[in-house]
Image 1: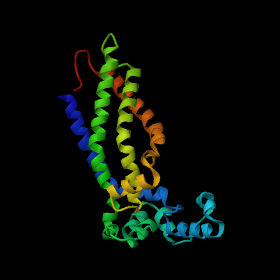
Image 2: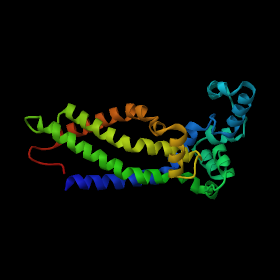
Image 3: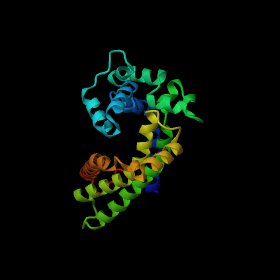
Image 4: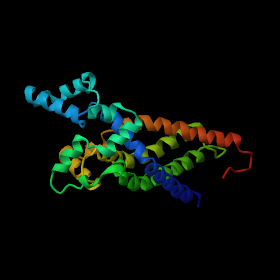
Length: 250
């Protein structure tokens, strides 16, 4: 039926979108996170020296200070990785290692050293392939259930503006419940941490707890839920206004 058509089509579209544009997302992650953060070799060495002089208790404050005050020397890896544009950052990722990757490669049984060249732009893409199908299935099922419920409350059996907003919020919430932990793992793999999905999940749960997988969940909902509410309610409103009586857009 129409519901399963939407589920299958949405899942295929989601997988295609995330995988084809994944290198761009990897570049974005590096630009946002690696200009002056502990993952950057230059900042890591600065942070280590500060920790050695001041003690481990002051590392957090020193890290915050570095993010605001440190400036990487011209031509350094920090400037190349995070301070440049998209093309220079992409070139850096393909030809250099972050400090996290270098540390991981020095450990035993590491698979990260086998990832070279353009393949580094696709590190962690498996998370999107695994997550898109259940996430989109949950999105459309939540949307259809809430849409049917709120439509039944209307005398005309049409989805009201508030019903559309509620349907969009429910669908987005279900989608983000699946994608948030996978997106967290994806970003860490993009930055060169861990050998793969299972290694990342196991390491994060052991060292940081299950909550580490959902650390960004509140912020994700804060940005995505309003977007989903506006998108769905606007879509339903325009469908009702632009569709002739007795004629369906489908």
